Structure formats: C-alpha cells, structure tokens
Length: 389
Image 1: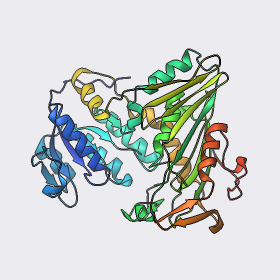
Image 2: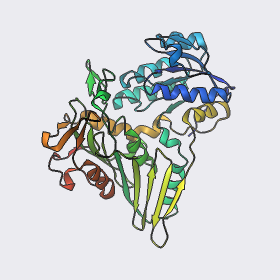
Image 3: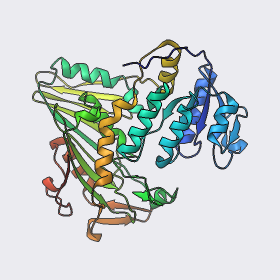
C-alpha cells in the first residue's frame, strides 16, 4: 500500500547522504546521476571525517558537510536522507530523520535485530514519513515479471525457491571497519554475516518472488552458519525459510573457488525460472518449450522514492516488504556462534590473499537446486541444523 503524502514535493529534492565512503561511494555516483537529471540535489554529506575534494565525484559542487546528522538535516532543509552507515546505527539515524519529517532511503540490512527493525518501522510510520529499504534487486522489472509467470502457471505448481551466492573476499575485507565480520560490537548487535549483508539480496529476492516478504509469511527457519575466516560472524552459510507458498533455501559463501554471479531459482513441477539478480537476467526453462532468456530493466530505488513523494507512485520496498528477511536476520542473530570450518576444509590463496573452501561452489549450487541444507547434502563439516520458529 502506498504511504499517503499530504504535500507532494517538487524536484530537485534536497538530499543528505549519511555514510559516503565504502558502499556510500555508489550512492554518491547515483546522486550525481540524478542531480544531472534534475531529480535531486545533494545538499549535505554526513561523515565523521569530511570528504576531501578528491573524494567528491565531479559535478556535485561542494555540499555542506558535518558529523552531526540532525544538525545537517536542519541546516540543509533536506527532504530525503540516504542512510548508508554501519548496521547498528541505522535505526537511530532513521528515527532522527523521521523526527524531522525527512523521508528515508535506508540501506540493507535495515537493522541488526527484529526489535530494532520494529522500532525503526514503527517510528517512521508514526512520523508519517516514507521509508524505502535499499534492496536494489527488488527494483528489477524481472521481479514482477517472474511473479506473473508463476501466477500464469508457466512452470506449473511451485515447489520452492533456491538461492546461490558464491563470492570471494580477501582477508582485508574484514579489516575495513571495526564492525566488519562481527556478530556484536561493544555489546551492540551487528550481525554482519554472509546471508545478512553481502548476499542479503539473495534471501530477500527469493522471498519476494514467492510473494512472501512480510514477517507473518515466515513459519519456520533453519540455519547452518560456518566460517573459514578468523572472524566472529559467518562467511559460509545456508538457510531454509518455511512459508505457506513453499520453502526458500539460500546458500552463500565469501570463500568461493571461482566466484560467480549470485542467482535465485524458482522451481516448479513443469519448469524453472532462474534470475541473476545483479544482472536483471532471467532464464525460463519449461516443458515443451525451448529455453527463453530475457534481460529486464530496473527502477532505481531513490528515483522510486522521489516519484512516491512527488506523484504518489507506490514504494517498491517499504519496511513491511522486508519483514520476512528481518525474521531471517533475527534467527541468525539468535543462533549459536558460527562453527569454525576444520583446517582441512579450506586453503589460503596467496595470490588473492583469501581463504577458499574446497568444493563450496558446487555445494552452494546444489543447495539452490535441491532446496537442501549443507548437512543434508553430506558436507562432512556441516553441523546438525538449527531450527528457529
């Protein structure tokens, strides 16, 4: 349902970006693109250390900078805040903006716990501001197209959805920030695991394709959380979410042998639909037909938020649409500490300075193909599954 906005905004909409380094650099480039189109105006940047002139993309002039988020929103007259800061800060910053009537694009994961997610969602709803959660894959035009294929019976009765993400990250990835690879920091939840942050899109997209993105769509969750790296959180994990429309099983690793494009696959009795969500690419395979591959477009989530505020276009990813994903985050947060993979299960790649889990690429793909967990596929190092309901 579209959030009602009493007074439509006019473009360009003034925007403040909180967190402009790391992934925030992507937002800077996107803001420059939208500023050139007259959609937004970058009014301010909130960083603990101001960006240098070299760190600002050409064409963004000299936006006001401050480490005080609230003061920056006040002084710039911002109407939208893009929050791309460490996970534990999301809720407080979102509520700071909401308290000033400033609308939000909040990066994923929206919060490190379901309680913090609820506090954020309740707060923005009470303030009457719009909030878009930054699952960019849910802006893909492939998502509604796949839902239509399912509804039309193109692949028969749906059995479930699998997801696979085989990525690689060097050991330095976990040294980029104090919260990286942590489950908690200074007594505060972080939950920076492979399924909750870098490959969170696989989980959220799988749930979305079944139309089971809301919290009450989840009837059970099974997790297997492991780590090859010397970190607190998990880097090689799988989860299976029970929903009324079938299971969503996702396996992911940051220790791939040969990193590839992550994907989700909808299994039906008479075919399957594979969606490489970073590429907006879809492959339909069904009985009695040749394979069909389609490349779709994508709606940028900040553009969609602006359209929502200017002409009432429905938000693509309101908080409620990510409730099921946050149930997964909560299950992972409450699970036992990730198990350390035995030394014989991985090796260190000197050239790339990273840990590689032997055979993990095939295992991740098999999980997506069979909707099974690592332990059910005979992985010798997988523990008995944990169940959360």
